[in-house]
Length: 226
Image (tube, rainbow, N blue to C red; front, side, top):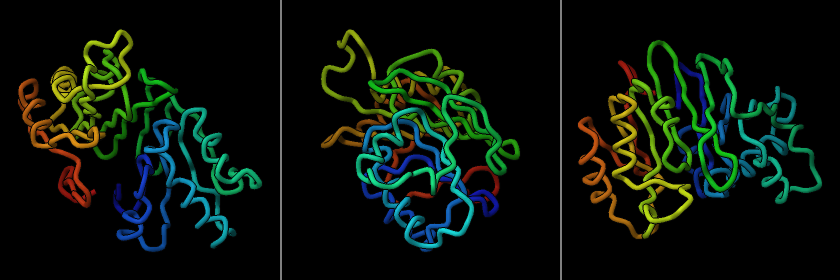
């Protein structure tokens, strides 16, 4: 997310660092937010660490906002180096001023500690669920958001599980409607799922625009591209 030159990254899962570098070849981001420790959300944080650690190490530490467990997971790949030589760590859930953004992290149900993230700047709000089961906190997280990014795993048998840690596309639409969000973006698709079918399912529950997260998709928030 680039807001008037301030670069904030939300989650760095598999193969996200190369895509980040296509936009910002120097890798010079201003802050990173990680929702939880599962590798599909944080593993490329290790690559960013190595760029910083072995590159220009004279600059300030990079602010990193994340729940407990994220650094432990990454340190398994780099056990001989203190990751906090590169990262200035701030714990989620919590509330922070991050450059131009008011950041709020809310705890949401998952297999490991997970923080949904709400970012506000200049009257614009973006919310992102990370991975989550159904919970009324989603309505609070995405309240009146200009864009609500919600996981829509659609794993077989999900709704019959006694303990819910993931959502369906229809449930994503339901919670976006409950939140009063203006637009919904679906993400975290189960391998092999039809993204168009996921969008159609979400539209059954949500009257606003529904997008599928696609590689290199750019979304306009407000009057400028962020």
